[in-house]
Amino acid sequence: MGWTKRQFVVQAFEEIGLASYVFDLTPDQLQSALWKLDAMMAEWNSMGIRLGYPLPGSPQYSDLDAQTSVPDMANSAIYSSLGVRIAPSYGKMISPDTRSMAKNAYNALLKAFSAPIEMQLPGTMPSGAGNKPWRDYDNPYVRRPVDPVLAGEDGPLEYN
Figure 1 (cartoon, helix red, strand yellow):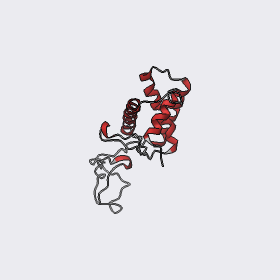
Figure 2 (cartoon, rainbow, N blue to C red):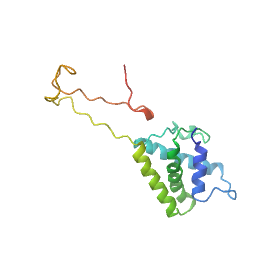
Figure 3 (cartoon, rainbow, N blue to C red):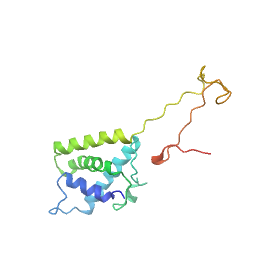
Figure 4 (tube, rainbow, N blue to C red):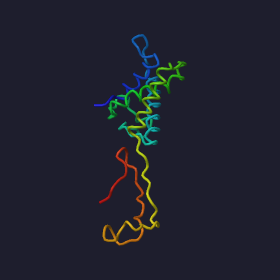
């Protein structure tokens, strides 16, 4: 099982030095950090970094105790980046170590989880001499591009 959203939020507060046995986090602070976490994960999702994080349809439907299916290698990138985002709201300065850890972990996520957009040739381009009609089909042009419909973290939908 992955971490819950609450665990990411509490770990981010701990990263900036606000979540220890001395400080009690209020429900408003937790909710505000949860909204920033959801916004950050939606931003990453739009950039092609799909981690299995359950995005709510609306901020009102976001549950702090919802389970995520985020892989373990992405946990430090999430909570350290969230800590960098919430620190200015509480007047905290981010340590250079935390900022460096967030950047390095995010770069590792970019390498591991981002999927490049597949380039497709236009349907008006000749297929060339190497594409013989008996191999595939009897058409002198390449096949029409497929317009993928994004369907969450799995990518394009396929119809049979």
